[in-house]
Length: 239
Length: 239
DNA sequence: CGGGGACTTGATACTGTTCAATTTCCGTGG
DNA sequence: CCACGGAAATTGAACAGTATCAAGTCCCCG
Image 1 (tube, rainbow over the protein chains, first blue to last red):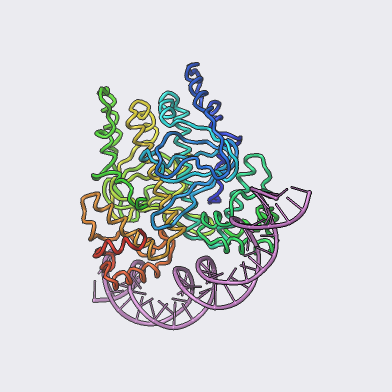
Image 2 (cartoon, helix red, strand yellow):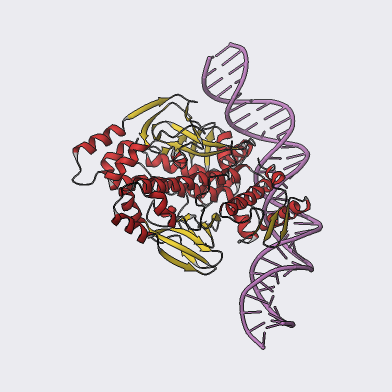
């Protein structure tokens, strides 16, 4: 059984939206369609740290592909409970929560200055009807999100603090590696509070567990800079 | 902010698959398409309690709509961790986890004798290209699953045992109500163990918490028979 | 009617939370 | 460029909630 976080990388380059063209064009496609797809994938917007891409409750306009930077998505509940549902980096897609009711059920906020490709959903569906491979691509992306969420449910429902954090670090490592960055040394873009919220634990527990990993020689941490020193033993926590 | 479990009911009748026809036909559609859709939605299979609908690792053949009965889906991890990812009743769809890689990542098992409509996924996609409303319907269903999973992540990541169980009971209540059954009195189809696994707690904690609810006059429990006596106060646990 | 699994309940152990006190980091303005 | 101030992070100690272990009861299936 594979690592729950070992999902196939969703995009090897900086922007999956901009990969739609080469990934999704079947043979013998009309030139006009290419132009449409091209146009579709190049509506770009920039965000400063702390800017919201969309809020829970706002209407669906588009899906969003991270081109550069880092986002988090989170759901908020009336009773005050909040849950970070994911961290998104280059090539990953946000906004699929809104397709169900045409209203976003979570909010997305930039954790650093970022760029995003906007993919108007109506046009995506329309083009999907002409281009089966584009349609397939969209379905795969949505299904991946479901599989990823199941992995997070497994993590939240049945793992201990150390296992959760080990899984989290190795998942980040793998995603950075898939984008051509070092899998062993990287900067955390989020606070201990945000990590803890995502992993279902308090920020103090995140901090303590990181310190314990460091004492055990598994990682080196200095504030947001993390280095994975012993991936194999880190993996043994949850594999 | 709405109740995380207050998603719009996905199907009011016993089989959403069999609703595809009336829900998804735009005006002026060809007779042949209707026939195809009709054929698509009437491949029916029956399962005994304990039978598996699909296993993790098996190839995607179809999506499955529960026509009658009750299922659970669960993911399994090499380290022995297991997580129930959901309980499915009439009108709900299973199998979308497999669209991403064409391989199922979770398993589905019948908790009682059940009937299922099989929806060959390739044909669904194909028909979706002809019928925009069918396409839309499929997208909404997948998005709903994502939203539901986010709700479960919120539950697992930030709620206490009492809140989780209250949310679980009220969610079941609402889903039974949407199908024309009593929202206040119903039979649990799953064991304490399965409830606990789904909610990220041990079966003993489930049992104790149910007993506490009963002593508080919120519910009545006798084995699998549950009656909700005070929905408002039960709701106050997590709303 | 017998037997095994499901459930309940109690006592105890332990993981993670809470509260609190420092320390470190980093953005801002002088 | 440095100093300041607030946010972020670390660490400790006491506490709470849930898990674990164990014993006994109940229910249902064969």
